[in-house]
Image 1 (cartoon, rainbow, N blue to C red):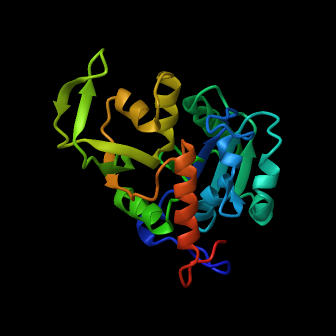
Image 2: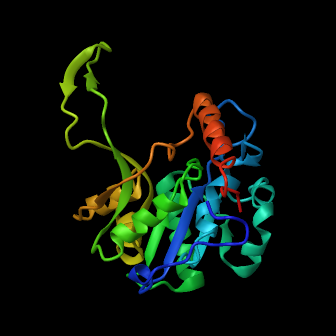
Length: 257
């Protein structure tokens, strides 16, 4: 992670088109059994959403990051308090238009992006889960650099290394599935604005952006991610992520922005 006086800079490879980020954070549920939606839970001294934003706000090559929250969200201002300068500069924008699904929130975020920035169809959009606060800047750069000249775009993912079993109706093993060629999707997922906006408008039942692009007949590229970029979904995940972040920011030169 960059220190508080430096931000990541862009190489010439990805400077031809603008890059935006969208973080869907419109969830209002409490699946972890907490009083707050999980993006606002305390994690190693900060709210989760605060941590998640760090690599995006540290990157000079990202024009703006849009956080899509539920209308009337009472927690977002507190979560983003450390990032007031980025909000004043227009590099961090809160979009109070969270939808019923992730697809709806991203779709609404792209509409807000179109209204404010008039992006070109071939500008890039990074979509990242608000509940993945373990993304490292170097992994974000790896994705950007790998896709700089890609005609479709792609996503971070991890190859499956465990044996995979498919259950039958009785909850017993019905089949052992070959793991070769299987990957676990992560975020960010990075696609051109025009094709992504079109695919999300056409296919409302998709679970992620890559699925929308696939439904449009295109094949996203898989870029190897990292194990600490996991999604926090259970109480054990929260504790594990707290350990990841605490260890990372005790390393020399690893100070949060």
